[in-house]
Length: 273
Length: 285
Image (tube, rainbow over all chains, first blue to last red; front, side, top):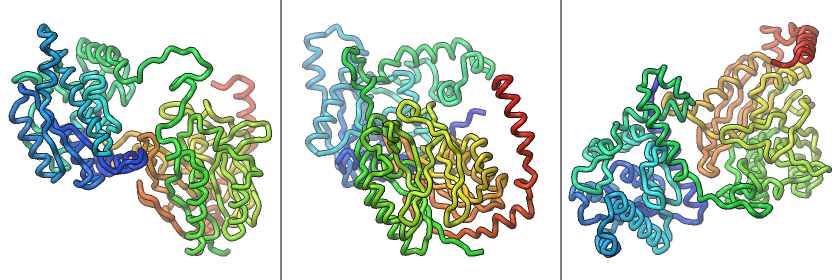
């Protein structure tokens, strides 16, 4: 049986505990989070506020000129509901200035640049506010590689990375995130009318079921086919997971010395904390 | 027979900081003493934290260490089960638990089964223990089995045949999976099944001490518990929160359970040995 329903109260308790613990261990008490207007960043902000108190959460809204006004409204709704501090930083000038030199750039390059522009702003604010950057990538996106490396995939700690998209929605509803945010079609908001599911070619509901069996339950391809999934779809999903593996690992270091970082020099991040 | 007040320290040790963890042990022991406990059980690797990786060699302690001297002194006032990385005279590092009482180390158990799969990596860093022995503790004849040891029923079976009345199980169990299905992690539910099954099958008390807190994102789920030889729950700590669980155990319960269910009496050691010898001779699996 494929059941992705969550015991939301327990998960919420674990994730808020995670945020409190890992923020304090790193020597901080505040977090900064980029709000896109989507459900993932909204949920991270809600968990952060629940964990640390609204006064310790800073939200940044970083629209580009093509971003939809609705995204901005939804991000502002989150700010208002949580009563967290926020700032709006338009990324249009810096992104446009860069692409003046590369007018031929396609949507992927432009989207990546926007994601990385937002990342540098978040990390700059993390220094300014003495706050950690709270991540917003979910397990589905991370496994499919549907995110920008060192862009939206960059953070200090990420409470959502082990929750599938469908589970993010459940927890978001449990935490009373406004339904307009939870129910709308997920979108990177790179151009008008863009949706993740149209771009990926399948729905999150469908792919989460395969990923859950493949990753969590260790089903092989024949097992998945036997479970009734279309072989081409299964292979396409696996291909995406494999192709994006490099995005989920730290950079490869050429092994030379007797003790190489992360290979045979292995310490926990929480060392002494 | 006299009832015993015992305590389980569901604590959150600091990863790789012996000094702070020693202070936490001393503070916890003071509270347990104040609440009348004669025995205090700490979780696995309570002095060091669990996911140590390369820290392991810098927190290892020889049995003669002054840090353990402080705990020995403390054990004049309350019996202690403490988890540590024990460094042997030949510089091998063990995931070990000590039973300290009356100022002495009465028993050392070195973890026999070192999990090296999933999120676990113990064989990379630690040496395997090779003994399962019971010892005389204040609460009765006891055995210590550390965490993964409990997932191999042969260990509890050996301890049972060696006279075990009290099974002390210090653990550092990170929660994994199952939140789709229930009110706790899947492995927490499995642990609770094992604890009850062993208590009932070996007609012994199970004192299960699991830790709480987070290490590198992994969440230790707590839920420490004491199970009677009948399989009944005696006391249970909360999930996820620090707690000192204080309860009473009655050695008379072991006797009563063995009268009702004479499972130990009916053990066929000769059959077991003969079949084990055969399996060894013919090749395991």
